[in-house]
Image (tube, rainbow, N blue to C red):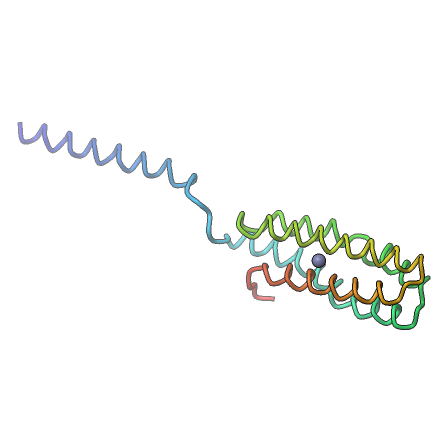
Length: 148
Ligand code: ZN
């Protein structure tokens, strides 16, 4: 009888391990795997490469060089939205929505700069440029630290 009871105990323990094991993946993900971090690092470098080029846009606005303002937005920055969305999809659920919102916001400011360039509206282009930078930096702040 004692032997049977201990077998039942073992069986229950085995079921408990099985149940816990199955429910684990449904638990909230709060950390990145090394694979995710590697992917984030790759995508992040293509996004921060464009962040480093943003001052070029400021120079064109300051010089009222509207042709180059529009060229820069449609050329080098043309892929920014796609790159930011691709990177955002790799982030943890908590940061992901925020990153997508900031990417959308940033894109909205770039559209406004493009319109301001068409209207040769320097004050609007400048203010939208600084708004764009704020959203860009807030987006980058959401990224996890990687061993870049
Ligand atoms: Zn904004």
